[in-house]
Length: 273
Ligand code: ADP
Ligand code: MG
Image 1 (spheres, rainbow, N blue to C red):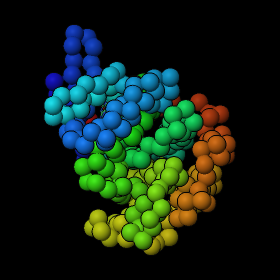
Image 2 (image 1 turned 135 degrees about the vertical axis):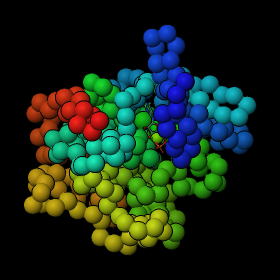
Image 3 (image 1 turned 30 degrees about the horizontal axis):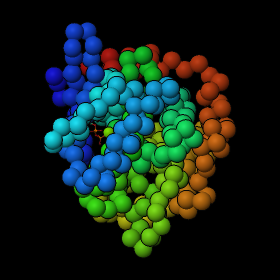
Image 4 (image 1 turned 60 degrees about the vertical axis):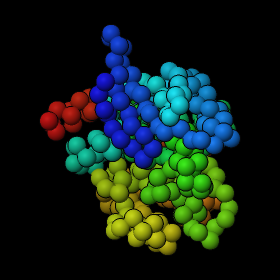
């Protein structure tokens, strides 16, 4: 067993048995039986999502007196670690390919299982050695935090849409909040850094009050700048939905080109050794 990483709601360990390796995420369990039954429902959704090639495969889960352990496919790395390691932004052609995977994964969760992700961010986007990009940690991670904090703030606040952070807004957030998180993630990968600076309080205040981040049109293609603008709309009703995003020129353009993510990944890993 080897620790892969620690996150906001648990620890991920790499476990091997003979030639089989998997990643096991261990999270403290909640004592609230209603919450626990919702978590189990989410886990069942995760386990039947193997028909989507853009979602990390889950093999099963088990529950002990103290924690919940989710066994999943072991990937090579997540995008925030990769960004830290290579210390430069991702090329637009790679972001094009990963946008396709992430939008398809979110669209699948919505249409097939009627659920939203709630924690879209670079550390929940994983890459395997053959360059396949997959989304992980939907629903369940948010639920466990939510039940512990007794609040509706499931997920990482830095990637939440302004409507979820605003204390004056009582509306329960919806699927469009994931689209905001996706837009912020794309900006971070394209520029190499999270777009808001300062303390966590200052960053949240900027998310609520400042103009949303935009990409520099002198550096990035018009389609890329536009898809970011379509995701990062302060008013959630103005954000594009998944059907529209899948038809966006940025996505159509990158679906039509043959980009070797595997080769790029091998090269950047080699260069950053
Ligand atoms: P967070 O997503 O908030 O960073 P997590 O507990 O979900 O926290 O994950 C911690 C780290 O473990 C992540 O940064 C990621 O690099 C790694 N990780 C999570 N799931 C897997 C997996 N299936 N395969 C490989 N690494 C993983
Ligand atoms: Mg995670």
